[in-house]
Length: 457
Image (cartoon, rainbow, N blue to C red; front, side, top):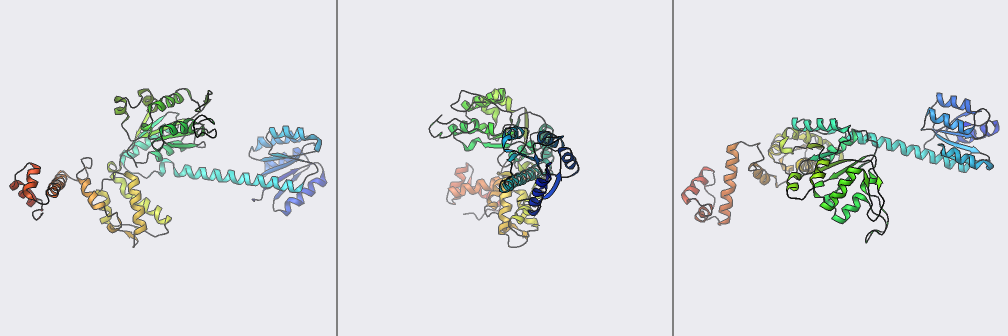
């Protein structure tokens, strides 16, 4: 239990001295005052955690002292001491903001338990505030690792929209960091001290999705053993992040649209609606415009969600971020695994720079975590990278989206892959492979020789 700074206020000297001795022995810092006016002066000049005040006093009674205390600092807890016959008065004072009350004569065990509860509450509030500050630091825009112009443009737009109430639609491939940007928007907004609630609709069945979003009452469907609030009510006052919003079926889209339009939810099985104040940030990797054309996504919901659109670039579009991301992940996983990995050699870095990263930043992070764990030296080398990377790297050169290689390199890689596939299918028979490709055998031999594949059987 954390020791507290406690102010005792009582016009009875014997009671004041007795409590002072009792609390001092338990390590608390104790101040005393013989009336409410003197007590208010002590509060104004000193740090106080808890006030324990008599109710019936001349000049200022307990209620007046309570009101004055809350004016000075609303965070100070207040306990009223009252004669047994005045419990009703004490309850009234509790409604005015007191933490609790004690009846005379004071039970010292009960007093000690009350102080312990106050101490635990303050410690919990302190830890929660610390956690919130850490979260705000962790998810602020400045903490997102980037130096590419494309990503910086996205973050600048996100920063400008954060303070508004606008619904935001975040678009990008899987693994690009859509949720990280959503959290940064939330923690830069006026709602930063309210809940940030995430729901990934792609992981939910249609029936479960409706209950998850809007809640249900007991007995509303088979398995509804208890009443449960939905994610919208859980996020009330804060932000709801709906990941993979393109996976929501149309019957649930209708209900989502109603929540956005009217700011109210209706639990499954209930006839009552409840007002909610929730900012929605949605994310998707799908092309919602194509889904609208195919009647798979409501156009009116699309316009409600797409007030501000943030398009997160893929990692292959922001390759200049790869080195600083690698450095960040090396430091992160070196700490986590108690290793002293100092960096990555040039060959391994070159391999990663040429890779296409279909899984984006998430894939890079997984690769570096693995490399840190497996590294025998304090520098990551090519042997520490995934063994399948060489084959995948070759395929990435032929990817038309990957412009990291020049035209000649890409055409050579494509033709090599094509000829190897034809020879593989024909069991190494060049005549059969030529027929498969609809070219002459002479042309095939010429291309094999030019590409350095002349000995291929």
